[in-house]
Length: 485
Image (cartoon, rainbow, N blue to C red; front, side, top):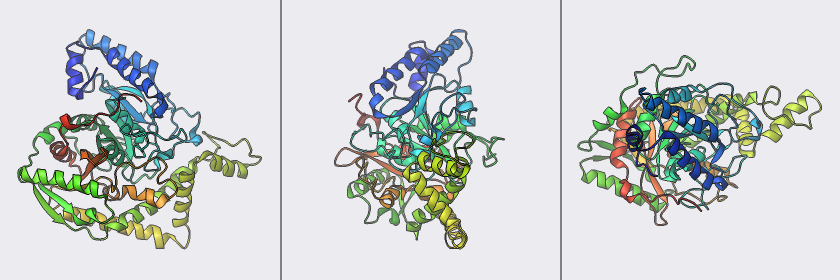
């Protein structure tokens, strides 16, 4: 049972060629065949089947099907679903069950989507490889010795391996786009505020966004349209009208499209295979009518430094709530209040989370606030001004999603700074808050996926998806992930 897109699935469901229950059983069977891969932390087997049967009855009774009727979805385990475990892939939230639904979940279920389960991730969304999980690493579906990217590696792997049609992830500095690039799928981070963050466990509140991982731009656009919009429970959500992204996508033409190509994105540190694939696809687009415009974005190499100062500062504040007192993990070795705090946090958090908490506390401390945190905020504003200016002359900014192909499990864990560089091309869009996505465009000499990273101006998601749809490599040349091991 294969579906090329949600449109294909929907037409079969509405014509009664297949039932929601049969579709869910198919995906659950595939999930079971990948049990050893740690892709899912929790599988909603009974709940998904019950919901599928209810939707089948709804259709049989002649009720109007929702816009996502029967769409089988996965959800990253840092997004709340009432009554379901919410672990953030951390020992700190061991045994915790969410008491409410995220706004995104409410909106998706209102349109008849079906959630299959919660996916693995880097602990508290801190990582670029999905190796920082208390549940163990997730292998890349294209090569089980390599990482799927992070922190939404489980969601990306679920879509790439056919264990969900679409998945939700979260993106702070590239955590949807980078794993999408590593797993040969589309990964979209919308404009900051486009999707409500209510129900998303906070890592760095001024960066965090719920994002979409899908096999194609059409499915991503549909799911985005359902989730987007103002939410009274999130003061940072935007009141900008939500357009028809499908209509905006069809309005995009390659003829006269101006694609900005920053020279800073093609430096000596870029893997030659990745550079070759990206440049070749851009040249193909030029031959089809697009115009390639050379750009300069000075001081781009400061993005990573500014980003890690700002997000660790916010993380140190947001994660202070996990203290062993109210919920989550509490150390059994504690014998007074002070030791309960210290030992619970020491035992409950993994190494990367503790590293970022300590870095964030340091840059916010007296004597260093102005030197580090304030300066990083000034750099953030500088990036916003430069990207606004650059996008006055072009429709989109394009470059590689990652400086290298998917790397081996364990290759970079001993060097955190090297790991942080995996996000060097995705971080700028997060700093400025603009919409960005990764779209698959080819393979390197080893057959590993390569993605192009695109950035558009604020609230231009429809245009962004339309451009990406032109760029995406045709389905006929896509190398499917292995069905089993």
